[in-house]
Length: 310
Image (cartoon, rainbow, N blue to C red; front, top):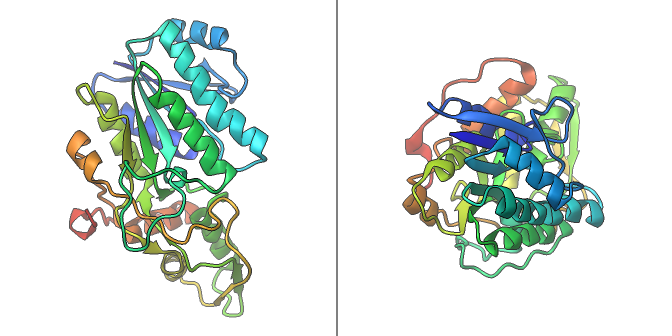
């Protein structure tokens, strides 16, 4: 089975490609715009015709689209998150209409959640930010196509290799810089929100199942931890994991990408039913693995299914 992973050098894409390489009988094709990519693709810039030619040459049985942008101005976000999936769907329809497409969406497409209520796939989509809106546009392009396609709406990914563009990765970097100094101060934005964090390795496992699952699949599936975690708790847990001895101060608003959304929690029942998938890493294990990756140390084994909310 030939699986083309687009965005294979990014945070999610790298974990997805690594996971798929462990599947017997699978050949992973690395796709992306960075130098050295086995299949050179730039979804934000390539024409449908050029991309169709590339796909015809690669002849994939499945395509996993992990490419996208989490930051930048609205135009850049639209090019990567909205135009990219639309061009990909059109090119696949011409070059490899039988290939399955697994596209990574975002829980930000839903917008504000209702406190203490898990959000199902049938919930209205009301994104409040350009990021959420452009991710939703990409999802619409995929779900409106005639392809064998599924969108995995991913919660807030966390775990080893988390980038500094997200809160867990940024806090880990600040903690590494602070070291054991008892006078160190971490100045962060408002941490009062609740978020659904999911380990990046669990996301990769969901992708594997989505690629290999028998037809048909629902058009959209939530992939999250299934628990609303206080962001403040996440930061404090990571600080404890790092042995931080200073203090944490909250100043101003949170990130623009997640602003005005105080509660997020995904209903992951459908993913369990359709894929036989559920999260297996508790948040504490994800943070331990994140910190171990930052420091170059070995993370403790805490892959405990019994600790997970399902």
